Length: 74
Image (cartoon, rainbow, N blue to C red):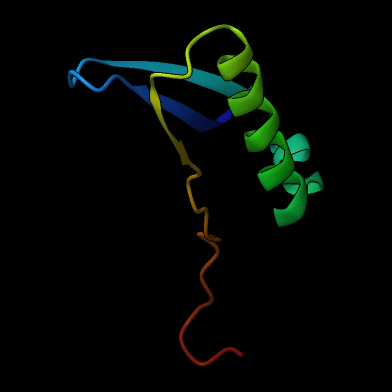
């Protein structure tokens, strides 16, 4: 499984990390716009839960292909 993370950092410096599990097909089925919408929905939910004093940072990992070609191939 691949992960995206929602990191919640208190003003005092203590940190709590919530991980959102995504399977490979789910991860690549999302557009960048959908990722931003989901992040905003998570932030709004946390604020509604009286956690508005937290600084919220959305961290999304970047994944790249590990496929390599042999020398001399295109």
